[in-house]
Length: 67
Image (cartoon, rainbow, N blue to C red; front, side, top):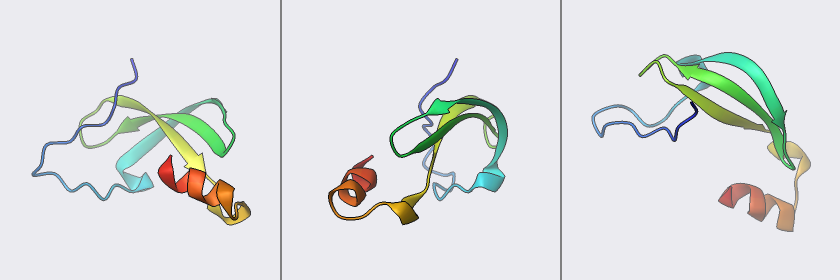
């Protein structure tokens, strides 16, 4: 089951791709792809949206930043 990643306050919150093992491709959204990943920190599975921010400008960039 995919859950929201809620880390204890003592764990670094600046996560990187190296903190996860990529699993299966779950789909595509308006701003990028969604992958199943497993956290190397807590061993749980999560959904990770991978965004290509370089192709968005103006209003779309603001939406992307909020997401």
